[in-house]
Image (tube, rainbow, N blue to C red):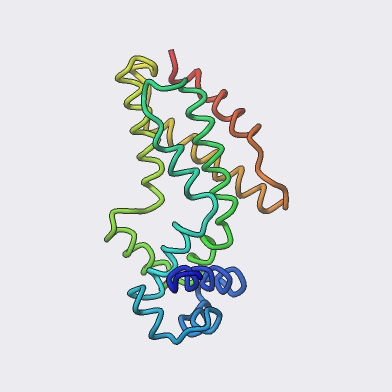
Length: 193
């Protein structure tokens, strides 16, 4: 039997996908889950915490992105590691556009979301920081040029991934690994000796 917290997250995902985050009330989530609103608050402080749970625990793209970002400098090749990161980032962005887009639809929701992520030391910038950190480690290992701007390289790569995911979602086609490989191979000469 599913745990109450899991049922709530599944219900929240359904409601958010159907109505958008701004209209996904705790009442609607509780109704979808078959619980009272009070039951939600036994497991989550508020709607924002439920949303973060959905994003981290119900997004099929979150675990692969998290795993790809854990690449250790000096392991595998820089190219293969960056392709894995880019592929996972594009899939994560593509899968979550409906959820992420709804955050921006209402100013209050966006401000609350940003505040909560900041309080947790989290946010979308952490992905860029993780890629830049990985590249810094590779720089120290001598596998990335010492004069390379690793922050700019991380931003460029993830920006390409975000744009590709957006276009794929907009055009109704799946994201492909080929785009990740193309972007990584285009950027590699700028920072790999």
